[in-house]
Amino acid sequence: MMIWKRSFVVVCALLLFITAVPVYAATTKQPQQAIALSINGKAMPKESAPIMVNGSLYVPINALRSLGFSVSLSADSSTLTLNKFWNKYVLSFGSIEAIQDTDMKIKLPHQLLINKGIKYISVKTIMLLDPQISSKWDSKMSQLLIVDYGAELENALKADDLSKFERILKEKRVKPEAALEYVFYQQKSAEWAKVAIELSTNLLIPYNNFFEKAINLRRIDIVKLMIESGKVNPTHVPETTFKDSYVGLAHRQILTYTYDPTRKQPVIKYKSAPSFELAEILYEAGFRPSNDDIVYTYSQNIEDSYKWLNWMLSHGADPNGESLKLVELDVSEHNIIFHHALSVPDPTAKQKIIISAYYIATWNPNEENLNKFELLVSNYQTSLDPLTQAQKNRMLYLANSTGRAQLASVLTEAGAQIMN
Image 1: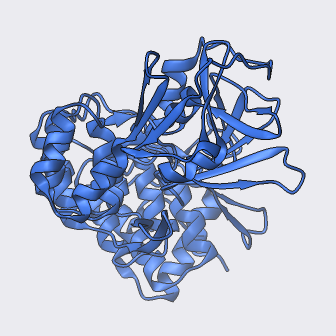
Image 2: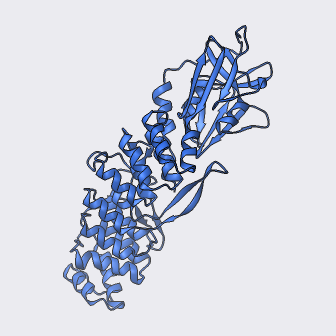
Image 3: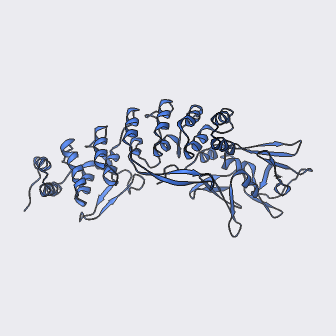
């Protein structure tokens, strides 16, 4: 699962351009003098000359390559696909919307246009897709200057030049939140992250929650920095991407990514391991596990799942509480369905923890699942009242057949009976 797929670019798109007016006409009103284009201080050839349409500047789509985008047209030339870093955008000629990462719609300031057979994209659209790009129009000189400060930042990272990195951020040429993204994917030390965190105004952007990313990437050093900065408050944090608790993220096995500068895209690095150390840090900061976390320790095949269940129960999860209805058994009790918070058929339906534990223990009565059930009822005195008489009897049979005298005693006291 990809936890970190909604980028800071989307938020900027919605905030900055919600009222933008699209340009539908492809007619141009050229200045008497041809417009010169400079990208990152380098003069572009005449075939990359910009045009002006209704007061807005456009550049040929091929100029995007000089700004770090990969550019491809569909076979019928109706759509333009752009990739940069971990973002993918599909723009259609004649449309004022773009699709980001297959499913997120972004409203554009202008449509793509074709003039004299050349395909153009507006400068405002470019700056929307990558907020680290800036432009300056010199009307007297008829010159357009475009600078990709993200590339400058990336060069500072590659050169291991922390002072330049800090200077770029302090001069507000790159947003500190975006810089933090670079730190994550180029796996720089906490020293670099500290600069971005101190200058950041919001680490908890919806769909681009940097605190959540630090947890998922197991960057314990950066998690600590964010907590110590006072910019992460456990009582005022957004939902995580997949509705896990923040503590729960510490025990989930999550695919993590690193950035490949050659291919200019993220690549799978490893599956992050559960971390008790990280869970303890989050707990000490005021974060608590949820009841859903109890069920996930059952349903996920993770190392030390018994220890994780015990940890969750001893750190605030309620063994007698309810969770989402994340586990279901059919009438035969032979087939089981596991859900996630985002996939439950009824997001309002609740289920007692002991019911979910019973379903899992009887569906697969292996040693681990029976140990977990016994932990709940023997060590944490979880009430067996939600179970039916038949369910109690079934658990008693399993307890006796596996030599679990303590569990059998608790079940008998709760009314379970040995059936012939």
